Structure formats: structure tokens, C-alpha cells
Image (tube, rainbow, N blue to C red; front, side, top):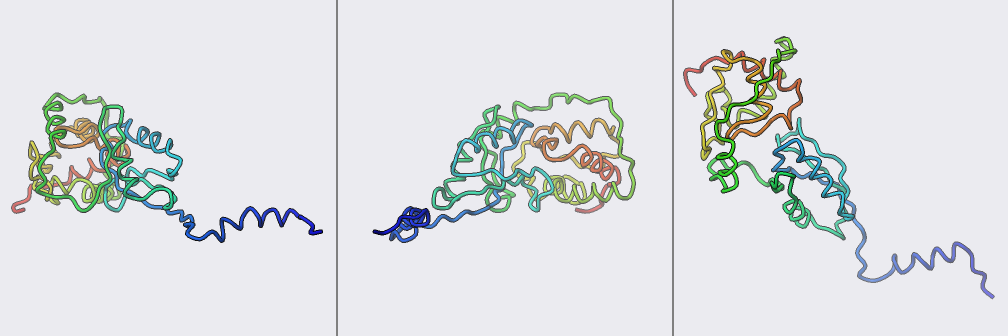
Length: 234
């Protein structure tokens, strides 16, 4: 009489999984997706919570700043036997933040001549040129060489696409905007608190960078803007 051992039971359970013909092996993949549509402080939480409800994926992180491309990066772990990258993109596109904005996986470089969507036009019309709330604060970050250098790198990464590398308002993606980006060489005349408010909250076509840049980043950026001079040529 054959003796049944615990090892025999384990082999009996695993053998159909190992030797069954045509059974696809699980392939767990970690991939980062560039995300568009993070328009408010509530957006990151809404995106995370919606994705957490899907058992096929695991949210490893959402990096809002200091990413190589400048786009927020969502890092996911998923089993390719259960869900594909294309299905993940469709899943993300179906998620709304509390304000009703849909998220989207960014693909390819920015199109400098892309027309505004109807949603973007409506958002710009709603934002208008309303007066921004300007807090009564002072720049806590001294304009040291280190601060200005940090601000210069932040400007190059996040601001030059619209405002131009020299701050003249002629960046490569300015075409199609409802209002032209402001020339930033005049920032030296502006109040620091006003600049901080504009950067934090956004205005017209400019997004609210307060959800991307830390408070220190914004003050370093302001210290750099104060060094810009009016260029003679583009």
C-alpha cells in the first residue's frame, strides 16, 4: 500500500499548474505611466483610491515632482496574464477626480500646435482673469547662489516649455493657448507673494503648480525669476 505524505499532497496540487498544456505563466511587471489630468490637490488621492479597488494592479507610487519628463509618474505592479498596459490606460481614462476631470496616460512628446479641447476651452473661460488671492507672506528662502541654481533647473524643467528658455514668453508649446504666456523678465518688479500665488494656483492656461512643486521649490523658482533680464533676441 502506497503511503501518502504531505509532500505527495503538495505535488498533486501543483502538478496540474506546472504541467497543464497551454497554461500561461504569471508575469508580474512594474511599469511607470506618465499621467495627465492632475489638476487639483484632490486629484492624486482620487486616482490612487480608484486604482486600489482593482485587484489586478498594485499602486507602488505616484511621483508628482522631479520626474525626468516633468509629467507626474504613476508606478504600477501588475500581472500581464490578467491585465494589459492598454487596459490599464483605459482604466485610468475612466477615472474622474472630485471636480469631474478625467485622467489620461500621456503618450509621446507635447504637440506644439495641438488645438485646445472643448474641455480646456471651458476651463479657461471659467478661470478667466479673476483676481487671485494673494497671501500676506514674505519669501522665507534667501536668494543664495544655491537657491537660484535650484530655481534655474526647476524653470528649465517645468516652465521653459511655455515661457521660453529666456523668459520672453515664446516657448515651444505656446501655440493654441487662449492667452500668451507672460514674459517673465518683468518678474523682478513683481511682489514675491503675488508670484507665489500665481505659481501655486495657476491662471488662465497655466496649471496650478502647487500640486507639483513643493513650497521650497516655488520660492527657489521665484528667486531665479528675479534674476531674469529682458532679452534682445529670442
